[in-house]
Image (cartoon, rainbow, N blue to C red; front, top):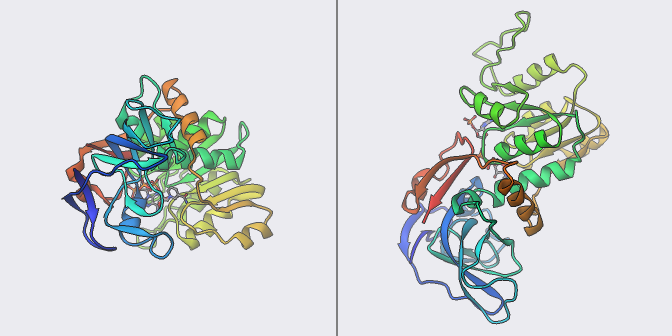
Amino acid sequence: MRAIVVHRFGATPELADVPVPEAGPGEVQVALDAAGVNPFDLKMADGLLQGKMPTDFPMILGVDGAGSVSAIGSGVTKFEVGDRVVGKFLTAPAGHGSWAQYSTVPEDATLVPIPDGVTSVAAAALPIAGVTAQDLVDAAHIQPDQTVLIVGATGGVGSFLVQLANIAGAHVIATARGDAADQVARLGAAETVDYTRIRPADPNFPDPDPATRQDSSVTDAVRFTHPDGIDVLFDLISAAADFASHATLVRRGGHAYSTTWAADETALRERDITGGNFESKGRSPELSRLLSRVAAGDVVIPVQMTVPLEAAPAVLGQGSARGKTVLTI
Ligand SMILES: NC(=O)c1ccc[n+]([C@@H]2O[C@H](COP(=O)([O-])OP(=O)(O)OC[C@H]3O[C@@H](n4cnc5c(N)ncnc54)[C@H](OP(=O)(O)O)[C@@H]3O)[C@@H](O)[C@H]2O)c1
């Protein structure tokens, strides 16, 4: 079968012909129609899980995948051949991912039925990014009318997070540069901040010097419009210094989360702020909940681009995401 693989950590991903995996006891074999692309895929190819999880080589990349059950192993009770399913194709040993014509997972992994009316391409965009957004909103217990700042709002996680925070009743401030402001506004952001060029409506606002312009100006811009601070920070992109700067906006008793391990949790606790470095559990119940919302039309799937499996190496780590990239298989 066709698959996108690396032969060692750090190698360039390439198309390869590899054996079709068989469904072992308790496992489901899925014929994949579509697979999502996430920053995690490149990190994994570069060795993020080295020493943490055994890995088989050639390592088939990809975590998010959607398709239909093509075989079941002995003892499988939750799925039948022909079921349309979506899930996360990452269990130990790693290296048997979703960027392939077939993959296998234990039936108890994150794997759920796709509701009628939701395409495989749409479903494949959800598992990592959508469920992370859902987990973040659940963790912060957002209340109606709370002010929520999302830094990195235009990418995969952010495009879902803007929608889910808006549905929870929050006043959403989203970072977005250039034309991406329209996109996040359509998804539910009440305000946008261009992190590359702060252009507030108030003429008294100090225009940042292009020579020194940097991400910390997001803090200045938000403090200018919200001098009493914000309730929740979701920072999906910043390193430690910028996260610390953004976190100064959060009121005592508020919440601040980093998905990039940038939070100094001790410093947050000293200011009575909960949250910190966030790891999505990414489980089936949240994925099913999100799929129901998609099927009901409450959440849209922000697919930026759909490309064939063979194009995966070209789109991997491309940056400047506007929603999700999905591979068709
Ligand atoms: N901890 C967890 O459980 C977990 C789960 C999922 C994802 N993650 C991590 O969370 C991060 C985001 O994931 P993702 O899937 O949303 O990534 P993504 O799809 O690549 O999106 C990142 C977005 O951030 C924007 N951006 C870049 N620099 C920025 C800056 N300085 N300020 C504001 N926006 C900026 C990018 O657009 P422009 O460059 O055009 O502005 C892009 O739209 C990744 O590092 C990922 O690995 C962690």
